[in-house]
Image (cartoon, helix red, strand yellow):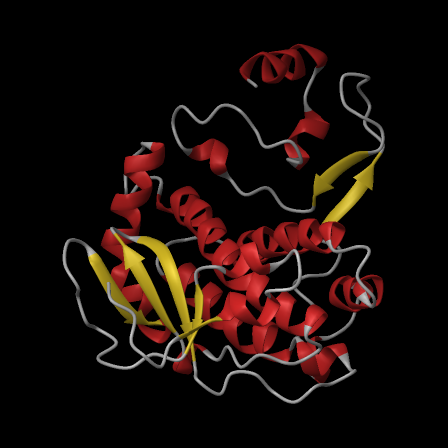
Length: 267
């Protein structure tokens, strides 16, 4: 697809930092029809219409993971969400932590490029960058209260999956990104705000990102101590043939030594 002349690479805003590589597929501004199909299976879709791409998304995931698009939709959409969050979330983190500026990521103003059902690029509004702000609630508001809520609500509407599974996928990614950014000024403060127990932006909804990862003491000596465990499993194991659990899966804490040894053999 040919980029329009007014689409700017988001990575240019972080060119002098080690974080540019995380946002190479994010663009600020776009011109033309959001539904423009440029050939093959590439299509630009307004993020508010993501649910219309359910069939293409599930086809893409069965191609990668196997399984049945309907019977295993829950686990397949959970895995797809990881690809999408890896595209979108780092941009908000770079803006909030590196630039100290909020980023307008309202789904009504964003467009995602899908390539055969997989998230290839994200287009943000041309005026997405806000004024510098010290308050993390201001800098991360659009990501959490608008963008993630909108995307997760749509994914949850496509199948019977608890939104907390998808929020856990986000939280696991954010925890990992904050760990990599630990040396950045303000990183520990932002992470503490992100994962603390509180209601979301003054409302009555509990923070869905509260403590997404914990350090647990495992019963088995076959696991490292402390063990980095996600709060909620991503349910990848529901896909036939996906027998190997991720390294931070909380189900590992419940397994016998025999099953843990089998997991080690699968790695």
